[in-house]
Length: 189
Ligand SMILES: [Zn+2]
Image (cartoon, rainbow, N blue to C red; front, side, top):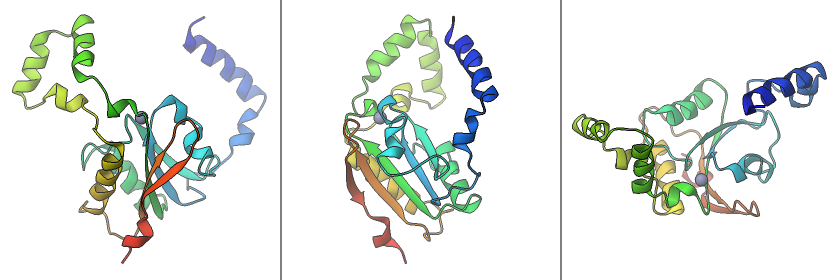
């Protein structure tokens, strides 16, 4: 059985047994918050449970490294939509210790791409078009700096009205312990 076949088989039973009832929620986050965090497997449930949130409490945006890589990319759009369309009144940026994006070996990733058939030509063509693949893949050197940088990117965004606190946290992926990096209430007008 493939993973997809397992998923589809399991899903039939899940729906038939009405197990979805345990997850009933509305589109609007009950705790009126957006959480941006990493796609790390250890944070799959821990990222909400360690903060005291349940299903339906908040909007969760996940990507590799909990990074806002571009002011007009999908992560920033999710944050802005959360605020202006879905009633979010707090933003939480949460990086984590031992993050894969904190020490990603870009050269090794590019070598794997090449080994799997991505022609060297493609890298050159992208470079010529202004896309440096090494830079595109690069994560960050320090998780604390990364969280501070992301928080600042939101504060500096032309479409952010400054009326929503932006908090910065770092979580330990083993214990769930939080470190407060930035208290968003300190910066409200
Ligand atoms: Zn991570």
